[in-house]
Picture 1 (cartoon, rainbow, N blue to C red):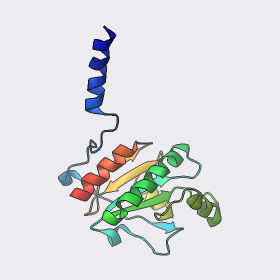
Picture 2 (picture 1 turned 135 degrees about the horizontal axis):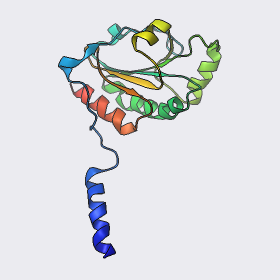
Picture 3 (picture 1 turned 30 degrees about the vertical axis):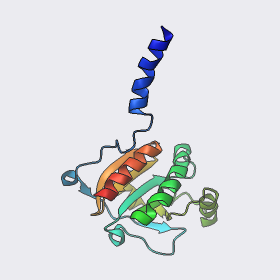
Picture 4 (picture 1 turned 135 degrees about the vertical axis):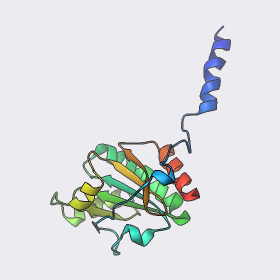
Length: 172
């Protein structure tokens, strides 16, 4: 009896899988809203970065803070996504909400080094935080090649959600 019951449970699990790659619903192109320009002081990039400069690429904006546990949990996924997709047309920017927390740049630079973050990390100004409605964090925005918001996550999400969204947007 157990032999019959076990396959009945396991077969649907194998068919559906645990991580559903590319099963993320992005906003249809006709319904997407333009992304607001960002204003941030980047710590590990000498360039002044703007969304208009990267038009034609998929952009992921990740709003986070060093003191945010869920944000810290997501950083290894973001590092992996950047390493995997940057040369394929992905820009990923980490935008800390800590611009007014009084921490010195060295504090952030150590954090960036400890997590081996290679993508640009900046301190977002209040106008940027307001225009994206940031609260709570982590909050992640996926911007299509024409500069429109295609998806937003709030909270921690599995790597497969990131991969699915990025792959769909890169294919557009």
